[in-house]
Structure formats: C-alpha cells, structure tokens
Image (cartoon, rainbow, N blue to C red; front, side):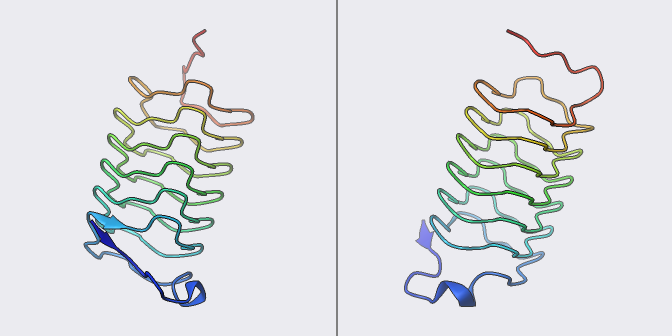
Length: 146
C-alpha cells in the first residue's frame, strides 16, 4: 500500500479537491485531510487509520473495505457513500451525515455517532456494539437491541 503525502507539510494537504479521483488502496493513515473534497472518489481499500477528515465532503465516495479506525470524521458529509465492509472502530462521527449511505457489513463498534444523521440507511448486519448514538437521527422503524 502506497503511503500518501509522507514528508509533505500537512497544511498543503488539507482542504484539497480530490473529487472523482481513483485513490484506491492508498495509505492516508494519520494525515490531516480536514475540509477535503473526496466527492465521488474511489477510496476502496484505503487506510485512513487515525486520519483527520473533519468537515470533509465524501458524498457518493466509494469507501468499500476502507480502514477508518480511530479516524476523525466529525461533521463530515458521507451522503450516499458506500461503506460496505468498512471498519470504523472507535472513530469520531459526531454530526456526520450518513443519509442513504450503504453500510452492509460495516463495523461501527465503539464509534461516536452523537447527533449523526442516519436516515434512509439499512442497519441490518452493521456492528453498532458500544457505539454512542445519543441524539442520532435513526432510520424509520429502527429498534435498539439489547
């Protein structure tokens, strides 16, 4: 996996436009990507472990099998994103927009989803163990299981 932006000043990376690009299988671990535009980008298999994606635009992005463990996605927009098989263990997703996102097989264990927008998503088979869903807007008919 290719490490992205190694040795580059982080201020030159954040707030960039990567919309529509194929960046699959890249290593963005620990990189500050806040306010970055990844709209409709192919991010399949990318490693975002510990990356800062606060306020980023990921509408329609393909994050299939992406690693987002401990990533900061506070206030990010993932409307209609594909997170099939993604690992978001202990990620910060407060105020994130996940409306109509595809989450099949995604792992949100220990994730902070405070005030997240989850309307229109199918949560069947999604791991939400120990996730904080306080104030989250949930799909119609969603029932918390103990």
